[in-house]
Length: 232
Image (cartoon, rainbow, N blue to C red):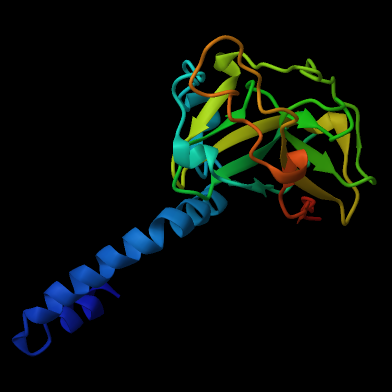
């Protein structure tokens, strides 16, 4: 393959082909790579995250004075995805599911993230953050994480910032022996926010800029869970 590419670039001694080839490869990387390559790599190599870990994102700082005007003007900036490897057969194994949250705008937008994921939208009613929803035929009884329902102002340590077109990934680790998954079961990821985040006192901005999602929740497409089939 590489020999064929080299022959094409240097065919008939025309060095201009080399420049054209380099330009085309650069354009492919700039316009396609940022969206396609991370997804392809993460699906091909399960140990790789599709985006930067959400835990490493910049935390909020003085939201009363420091916010992106473009970010505040966005509506529904987030896209959710879920990467679901086949569920392991070994009951002592851990099943890792990736939640991906992506900012599709050119502004910096905040979201609530407290280093954990809720399992089931109704498991922690009105709690803000990221989570997973299994189809009704999945049997799983996780320990509910602490609820932030009723919170009107979030700690800045629990607000992360996604830059323009940036995405982050969070791995949910589920013990295999704690879940029963039948054929045809599905899972979705979601992000929910119930308040803009109140700010008191004299500030430039009236709130923490969190109410960017219409209806308060955005969900991914449902992914079918692949069951591991043992060889006989």
